[in-house]
Amino acid sequence: IFWRKYNNVKAKRRYRKTNEKTKSRSVERNALFVLLITFLTIILGSWIYAMNLREIVVSNNAIISADPTALVEVEKIRNVAESQIANGRLFFLLGSKALFDKQKQEKQQLTELLSNFQKKYSLPKVPEIIKSIEVVMQQHQEFFDQAMDFREKQTESKIVGQFYQAKTSPLSKQIDDSLNEISRIQKQELDRSSAEIRNAALSVEEQIPRGMVWMTGLLALVFFGMSAIIILMLRGRSRQLSERSRLYDEAKKAVHARDEF
Image (cartoon, rainbow, N blue to C red; front, side, top):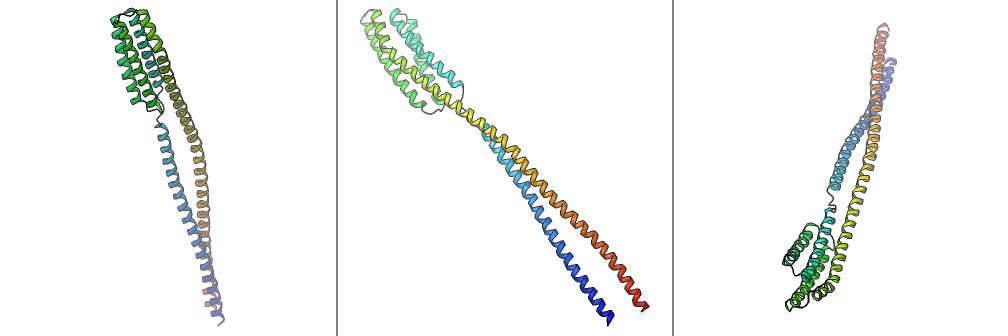
């Protein structure tokens, strides 16, 4: 009876220890599983962050910045407009057919330059400004036709030239002011695009180190936790082996004691 009670007590103790060890192993496994899920989440989040950052870089590179060649085109239009008015005045003063042909050619060239500029550069308010320039060109043509009528009536060339200059000088100033407005808008677009590109570059430069720091820190924590749990599991395994060896020795001694009894 005494031996049976003694064995029952030892069996209960072993059962409690086994349950405790099983629960401990279960907690460690659950913790290891959670850390593994956390690790995979960090990797996935880092990949998504990298893809978003790549999209930001691509969108920054694809920013439609104002073309600086538009300023060159504006100056070209200005030169053609001024040359057309100046050649028209010289034509009425000198009566040269070459000047008349050149003035007519420059008129056609100016029309084409304005049309191409409007199609090529989609700047705000530019269509309205070009339309106003075209209106001024129509007025210029009306004054040119009036001067031609005076010339056909054999009016003195100097008088016709003065009439033409008096009428076209305000028009020349209007065209010049309109082209200055286009240049101002173009420069604003250039400044805005430069500022956007600069801010985008600074943003990317800040996000990359910040993301690397966070990812490195989180991965370090996860690896530390996983290493700690693995070490605990290995120690638990070592204790189990030691406990099993001890129990085996105790069982041998108990069998030997029973046989002697």
